[in-house]
Image (spheres, rainbow, N blue to C red):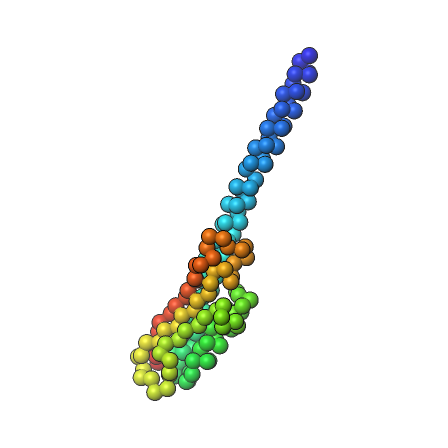
Length: 142
């Protein structure tokens, strides 16, 4: 009789374990996917800041006479991180002032790069779909 009692108790405990696992697993995966997605957002934000710095560095050179060269540098820098870096609707690059010709040395040039979080997310965002990630850099003309 002792043996039968243990067997019945073990079966009940095994059933409780299955129920506990079924309740906990969705929360665990939600946590893991959330961590991965926020790490991805941080990586994309850092890539935007780095690309803005590289484009601004190109723009401040005396040999750079138009914005197209600096924008090309930004987009080439983002190619390693974002598949849609060439798409002007999804990845917006702004360089100010608009013209580099006749610019005095020491004039500040600002390069900013913006992208919607929903365009770089790996998981379809539900509560962060209106977030805009931005990287910006300001340097003085040589």
